[in-house]
Amino acid sequence: MEGVVIKSTGDLYNVKINHKIVRCNYRGKNKLNNIFSNPIVSGDKVKVQLIDNQSGVIEKIVERKNYFIKRSLKDKKAHIVGANLDQVVVMGSIKNPYTKLKFIDKCIAASIYYNIKPILVFNKIDLLDKSENIKLNDISKIYKNAGIDTLSISANLKINLEKLLEKLLEKKTLILGNSGVGKSTLINKISSNSKQKTDKLSIKTGRGKQTTTFSESLEINENSQIIDSPGFKEFYFFDIKKNDLKFLYPEFKLFNDKCKFNNCLHKNEPKCSVKSAIGKSISERRYNNYLSILDELD
Ligand SMILES: Nc1nc2c(ncn2[C@@H]2O[C@H](COP(=O)(O)OP(=O)(O)OP(=O)(O)O)[C@@H](O)[C@H]2O)c(=O)[nH]1
Ligand SMILES: [Mg+2]
Ligand SMILES: [Zn+2]
Image (cartoon, rainbow, N blue to C red):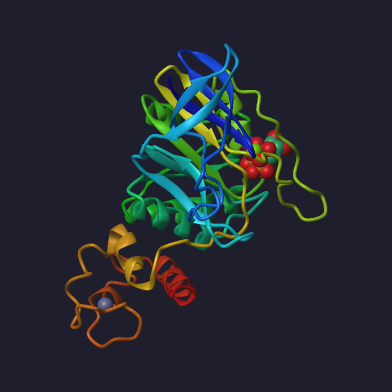
């Protein structure tokens, strides 16, 4: 039987087969010498040998259309966050907690690298005063000008959720972001079957409490799924190299091949076309974060 993994909690997997959830084990032979720290993830299609109505054994992972991975801090392998995706929602917030633009840029760059459309969503706009709203508008403009689909919402007050829903219908979406930005809260508002646990921010750190601990696929409707994922603070690329980065900025596209040197990294090479566009069609903040990310890569 073929099914789709809805949730993976260490050794047990919930697999949806013909509208029913079957609890499955996996005894993958190559588990240990695999490049992945987790062999199976929500969104994976799998072949299952049923034991009875409610349990089975995963025999095979069907080849993935794509996946979103990051480097696992534990074993430096690739940690898969979601598979077979149409798009990624990168969720940030201006306040409670503040999301660093560099973090957003990394999530967007990785989505593009893995051929998955990024959508940037700022949550918690109900918390913003006038000057914070101006800040949000300035930041949104940076991303819109860079060609990134960008939207501001309040999950709690249901502001702009209709607009977001339009983008999510008929798609399989992975939602990513720092802990506490409101990923699970949003999913609980738009999904018919979601009862994801949510929690207040920590008073001490002002950040989220890592409430969601496993990726889980929830249903918006029969043809639209959204995968909730555990919030993370730092994002380390797994296989993205220095030379890849400049191709992961949509706003560099017009300039990448117009520099004096065709291997230009747009750092301090002479006659760099990207550098000459800074402050015009390329945002200085995005460019500075590009340099900072570039420095972290091999
Ligand atoms: N004011 C306000 N608070 C929100 C909004 N959305 C979520 N929150 C609150 O933010 C806190 C964290 O929300 P969660 O949904 O648990 O955050 P998360 O991103 O799933 O966090 P992790 O699972 O730890 O990654 C909760 O107290 C929510 O009520 C919003 O639109 N406005
Ligand atoms: Mg959560
Ligand atoms: Zn250049």
